[in-house]
Length: 211
Image 1: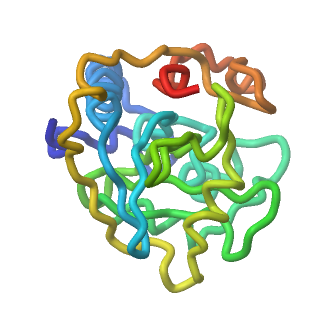
Image 2: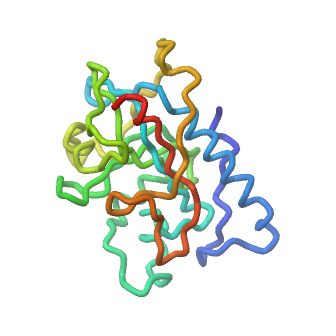
Image 3: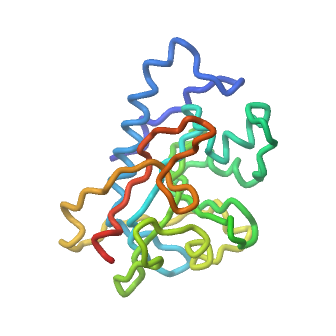
């Protein structure tokens, strides 16, 4: 599926104008369809190849308050000032596919996304799990993780936002696998962002097939 139909619906205040509210569900559906098409695909980062098995949607362009780009752009929307890099999160507006990391150094809160939108559309897929070159899950549990992914990619600051190759995997075992669909994973639990009344099933996962 192409990403070219994806749009930013929000205005300069971070709100969706009334005349565009009817497009939100359509944009969400297109984003999720695109994310599902990534399963079983290969991502190549710094010469290493991995198969994507667990992704979460983050879509600031339709007002997703948990997306780094939205948090950096509209800090007034939050009770506590978001701890997010404006410099790095602005890279999310570049045309994808690109690799994003939320910090310049690795810590237990470092995570990596795939920037997937057309230019100026704030959307990315958080990577929670993958298969390595030997077909093993890099995080051997269903709900994956994030810091391990960042450690494997080992991006330098000037590599954040760089283009990545996403290619089809010519292997029958990935065909016909439909992902489980749950709320986004917080602290290892599929509970969504409760402070934002997040009930969306934006965590897609095929990792259980490889445990």
